[in-house]
Length: 248
Image 1: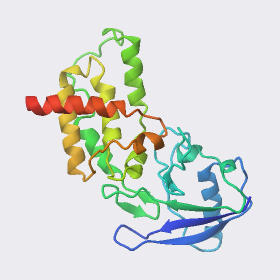
Image 2: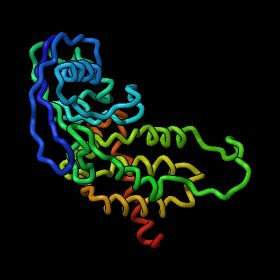
Image 3: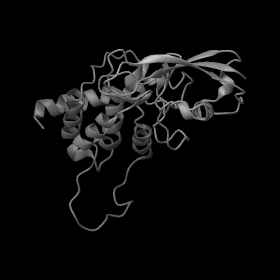
């Protein structure tokens, strides 16, 4: 399989960016998208050219590092699939593929298609934890939790923080990410005492980071590689509203 890549190249966040075109020759259909980029980069390095800078780590759909907009859709548009899980058999021989970074003010470009997502880290630091007093670690089964609640919390905890929801949203909103990270704790009895304060703190930090407002278009859920439900946004809105009323 031979392909043509149109790749966004940008030296740093202060430089102007542009698209460059590269051939991807003899691509094996069973390659992942990132493996294909590895081969293209090997050819660029052999030719004495600057390789394409992109993020990756686990390459198993766990870490959320593989942040690429492929043909206009974050992660390539296959339901429940991160870029590292996208295989080249989904493309046709001779096809032209456009590769861009996440485009959001809160995700400044580091180089090429690699962006800085430290804003997510600061949102987590604002309230994505359960405060505990020092002392012995309680037994894991000391607090009974129903299976329905545990399953719902785990559904929220599946979020890998990749930022595809932000990249897909016309407002660059981070509400799906924040909703998942708030809900995974607020649903559990351990997180109950701080749930309103947590929601208030994390949404406040999200706004400080420059993310846009949520208008519930559903584009975030559509591109989420872990298929996080929009229902978590509704729960976040309830927890945030009560927190704002209580001033917590």
